[in-house]
Length: 253
Image 1 (spheres, rainbow, N blue to C red):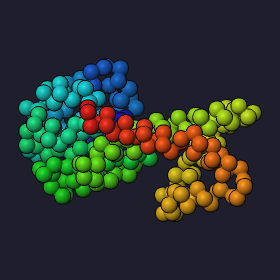
Image 2: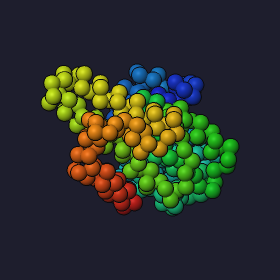
Image 3: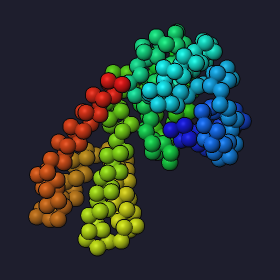
């Protein structure tokens, strides 16, 4: 996610690379970031905390406690902390940081191609103008949506984790096409483009997904037969149950 954020900031938000500083524990990662983006790098998290006006805490949830303990004494009331970890609530973050400006987000990996969707909420310390600035930064790698924190765990299942479900669906469709004789490279292209185009129809037409589905299902045709089998195998129920499990897991992190 850090690469997606940096790429978006440079390409879409017209942020100069010289104004970005990133830290990481691994020298190889720092070299890659420096070579690719021409940004400032360091292995010292406290240096980033001292230098940056906006700090993206782009580490795994299990490392938050240690990283926060390392940098919290460097954070001032003028800086803004942006988190991307599931399960780490604003109140949990405030207990460890104190009364500082915190924006909690849940991005997803399509941000790597500028097509992410990120749920965003803030604590009471963040002013409207500051929040809009953060939203503009996040919009540089996709869509940013202001949501109440009560929906953040749901955001994990419907967007944060959902690319994995979609990739599995594309892979399954491609496998079926290969089984029926299509070369694998063509199968992936057809399956992926079908998913991309279908999603674009939902977003651009504003029509209900069910209505769009019905447009494809001719009476007695091939599509309704495929839909019948998907329903028989519990397709929708499986997706719903998987997402409910994902949301429950996010709440427990």
